[in-house]
Image (cartoon, rainbow, N blue to C red; front, side):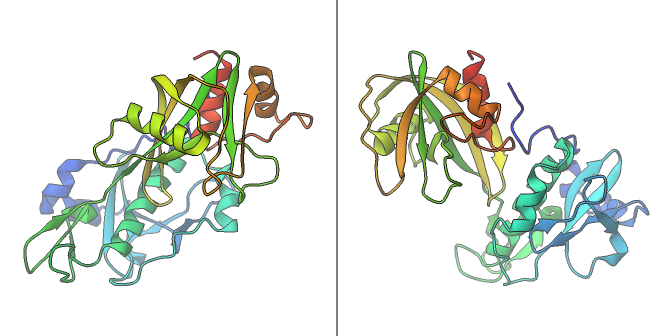
Length: 289
């Protein structure tokens, strides 16, 4: 089974530094300290496809402490207060996603999600007062009501429904021609993962699912999701798609999926990209997970 994209990070997040101003000051004063270069929310890669960093003294504003990479303090720039950054996947970023080193991809995912969160949460959700960065960048605090706000993660189930030697895949209109992938949807309040898998599959495709098994998870920083990959046992065959969610949905055989993952030009569909956990999920299913 291929590892999901944006995983495999080795960054020491150093939670202790977030609570000790003296430790944070020492990290900032370290002559090796480095600042991640971001253009909006897009990173920059060098000739070796590594993330580009700059000395910390080049930072013009507030800093967000990411942690230590092989002992080197790493920071990201906080966006100016009240200026959310457009959270779009630009053509430049798409061109980089297949080039990232595993550790760099994981570090970038954390940095992007954190920077974006600060840009979108500059005001207190309780009293609407402008908030200030605290805990080394891993929270915002209201000076008026003292409410504390922390970066959130939105859980998403992404799943295959299997029936014998077939698996259900869907297609959204915005995807490249011929691409099919796993169904997915956000967990709702009061739901378990298994319940969300069953509900989303039924809503989108009309397929009822019984037993559900977990496969893997992936941070997805667009903007701040946790993808939870599962496989469910389908209890019926007849597909009835939700046209507001899907353009099409079909059953594919294990051989169909194997050929698609191998990028066979004669495969009956195009597989999701390797950095997407849907690719990991399909690989796992083909291997009999």
